[in-house]
Image (cartoon, rainbow, N blue to C red; front, side, top):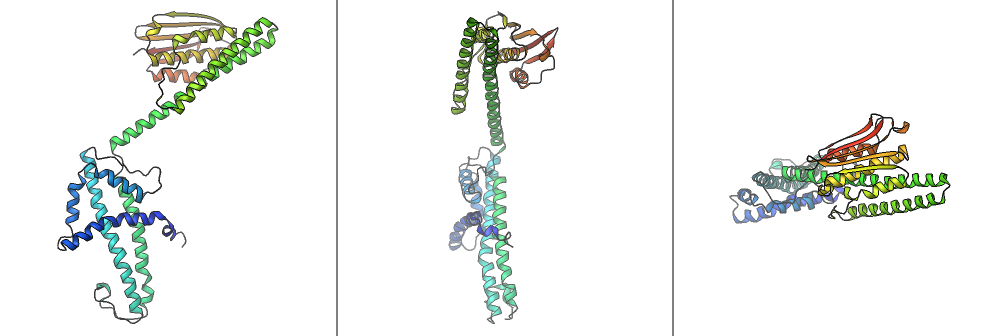
Length: 385
């Protein structure tokens, strides 16, 4: 019973009731002007609903009164952009008028019927204006029927309010174009989050890997000069990682911040020097005009190279590394090879290698990571356009 009466304690029930009463104000005024044509306001709503701005007003009212406090009410507050939207607005106005009539009838006549049933139970003759009880004979049994109209009123108020909310979401909800725009925006947000996650993984993971390798080598070398170089490499790599971290956090704080400050393949020297300082013997060869590569391709190429070197240092240690970067035939060809070790003998399923393949696929290219002729190979082909 308490659950059945719970809607009476919700403010939404009464704001929805108010929303359904509002059209009746205009209808009540019109009935005083021309009682013979009570349907005239409903006809007048047809051209009104074709006005694009009317959809905004109806959407705002529906959000405030039908779905108060909802973060995602499913109701649009934009003007009608197409004739389909205008037609949906007209249907909503007519439906709101019809529901308003039903609500007004229930709120006026059902309490009157309850009052007349109580009067009949007390032995008074019902009023002639209430046709349902016009022929009723006063009797005490009518007291048992008195609650029924109130229950019907309760069901009507709650049910009509729920029906109005459902119709509002259907008729005033986002159009197909608005849904597509919202989906595209959501997709962009997810892609941006994925990109930032990869950025953190690549930059911070690379810095930590270099620091761990350098620290381990310095501890076992027993050479003060080597230890000094290792500490310098750790400091430089840590500083670069902090810059990357600050840049990524800046992207999170400022959604409109450009990405042009991200490192590109032109800045790859610092990656190579970091790997050399960690003990790896890096042989790099660059062919073609690297500076002419577009920003998105060059930035993703830099991250692919960074992740490939990180994997070498993490899993193979100080081993010879051959790097080939070629710009030709509308393609950026990037290859990183190192001797295959036991730690790298299995297929590449780590998040870093998966990120390399994702970056290449995002640009319409392809990447291979795995063993090849006794070496571990990372080979990416990225289209320049």
